[in-house]
Amino acid sequence: MCCKFFSGRQFLAPSDIKRIEGAGITDFYEKKPGFSFFTLKEKEGYCVFYDHAKRKCTIYAIRPADCRFFPYDILRKGSKYYWIKWKLESADASCHLFESINDEDFLKDLEEFLPGFMEHIDEYADYTDAMIKSGESTFKLLREIRFGKKK
Image 1 (cartoon, rainbow, N blue to C red):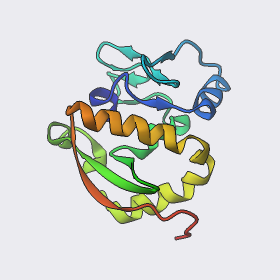
Image 2: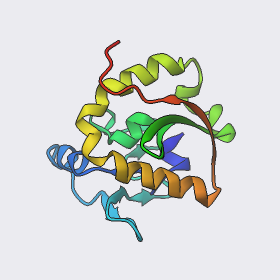
Image 3: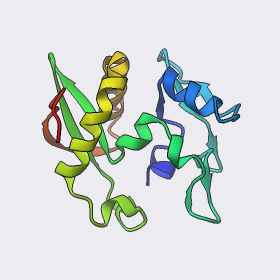
């Protein structure tokens, strides 16, 4: 589950911060050392918005783009962008996203969301690349992103 395994590493675009602050929530993000963007804070090894008792996100409807993408991410190779899927075997049993997910259906939905995220895509892809280089997680390359396509 992204709330645990990527805790403290979720990329926050300025639009994510504005949307969450618009709900009256403050003190939920911090600057990521070595990067120019912010990430969600951690609480007890989980995302600050994870409710342990209910086992769910307390801001699901307004969650950041990075959380919407999970378990997928964006990888840049040259001038092209690709969808990858994180291989988190230890998360498979606890995360509802791994139960009956259809990759292509999910990716099509994400591609409809991307136009509002384009101004951040390079920085986001750089962060994905840094996570891959850290060797903490492995991934599967799925396909090139189809920008501007409808379902």
